[in-house]
Image (cartoon, rainbow, N blue to C red; front, side, top):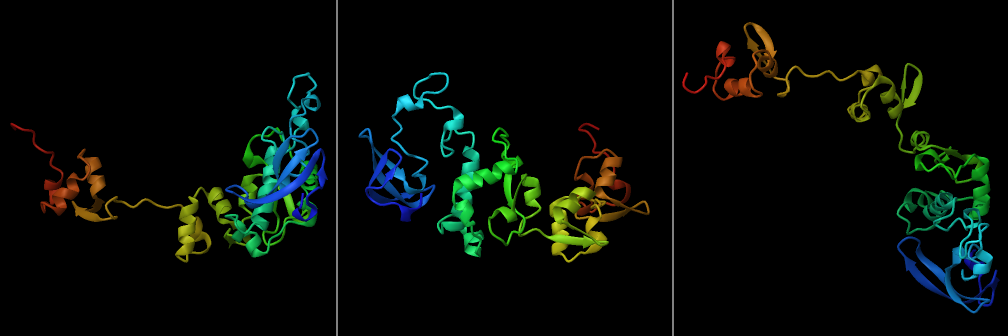
Length: 281
């Protein structure tokens, strides 16, 4: 319920509003909270935005009998979606987070949404309307994988509204981020991730090439290993250019042996590949 609709004496279901106080919550930021009195005489504190979802003190056990007759319980389908046990709790959290990042300046993501002028349409200010849209889009509360059902804006510079949103998975949503880099090669435009996956190249490798100014098909070339793991250095051995690693592998020497002999001891030729003598030889 909106704060402008609340005043002392107002009735919400079985609750009567008495007075409000300002509280700070690490989850919701600064919010208004109302002290309410139930028709049964029980007092309860309720956050303003939850009024309506919460309409009694929660102690009316006769009204909470489930179909199987257990006291103090409700069937999951009858629970308010803000309840952690509700089937639609995850959808409610998506809606709540959407509202928070667009309307609460203290939200850590506000600068990326509300701070950029992104807002939530008036229709979706009411959770019931958002829930109805999500169900029409195929939202299934029984799918537990969070990555399979995400709310994605088709145009990342426009608002949260039915015409600009879709229900999709996190992979598709990742292709529609504001900071995605799109590349056109031979008339085909794709983002970095799509090109990298198609040609089996590490995404960071492609991004590094882009930062270096490399363009076109050169971006799609698979990296070639250098002949030597020691800064690509080659030496002349028996008239041929070889690496330290190649000599060590060919003559079954320990890693770094040839390099040490060449750099530190100044050995050349066959002295580089002699096997170390054992004690007593």
